[in-house]
Length: 553
Ligand code: AMP
Image (cartoon, rainbow, N blue to C red):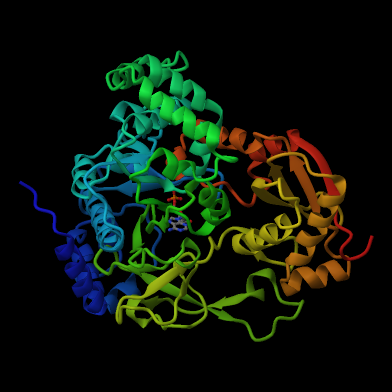
């Protein structure tokens, strides 16, 4: 009999986090001991030493032979940064730390927003499974987690069992899985306590689909017969087992849907016992918050933890903060962390090369050497929050993925800079026109090069509005390198290209075709020349373009 105690989980976390320094030393010792026999470590001359100093002195190698314990499978990263997935080792330790982070953040969440016994409407999807040349199974990290027994046990412990059967999560057709997640969620609507996904984009996407298929879902529930659109036999069989004719449920869903104004608050209306909406809402998910808040109405949004295919980093232990302010407490026993301090260069003149315009990288520092309130420190790029609750383990904020930059010459704009520019410009769009999704490209095929911003809009906007938005975008990139280059004509006028509705769906499907999973999908906010297929999809779908006149015609 498993006994799960929220109090124990929180106590354990407090003990770990207060003693982060020692935990890190212990964790490093443990990792080096476990893997001491690995070819990679043997070759570095550590000779059995397991202290941080020896580690720093010896480990500079890039050899691929890595671990002492068996790698159970391979995780494929989302591949939205470089255009193709990375192959990352996955093992039982990683699975354990995933469960630890799920339980920790749940314990903190549940203290403030307790949920009852019930189910979770989870929009989660597995990726395709491939076999590597060495015979290991490779799929996305989330798929490796979803298929494990521990995942099921933990979901039970934290009262978050998925409404849908496994056949839906692991189905080969994403659209059919999505439809069935919605259907199962509605079948169990009284029991649903939370609505979640790995990344918030999947929830927004699911309800965008719901707007189109709700009548079909009602019909299935009324008749107790699954729509003919579900053709995968395993999904059909599993979901049909749950479906009984239920005209009164169908009526009540129908009544809610016709009564809602533009789908505002659809989630609490259809799932009256839901306590919150949960998923990663930071970083590249922030642009979807507006739409998510619209669907969630009165329900709180809770941002999930921070991790990557390589390993977890931190848990959100302040769940009541709005997603924009979410912080992550680094769990000092799940990995050995080093941070690269990013220091502002003193001279930011135009002669500097692009990489030094914003920051200079200092030597890596340990977890407990990170200082509160200093300039960004980076794993990718994290920022410290002043007034952290916990004295020893740092709480970090996700700022942006550092490798994503829009740059023509000496200018440099990050994913965050782009997001802020798009937000500012979108305000100028009329009430009814929403920016559904966006990305960017640095077009150097023209002389001089210029920024191209792609927008998918919810409906048509007038020429005049687009011109205003385009100028606003151009002026919103305030990086000194950009402004200077624009003024002297070293970068040409920014171009706003509007793409056909559904273009970003096509991009999503392109990534799914490469073996990505919706659960880990992040729209690439910058598309380079090397990502030619995505660039072609964008170019094929352009319906109109406008050039900025912000720095003169
Ligand atoms: P993957 O590339 O599939 O391994 O996904 C890992 C990436 O997802 C990280 O490098 C981050 O860019 C992003 N990510 C993960 N957790 C968060 C979070 N809480 N907030 C923002 N971005 C995140």
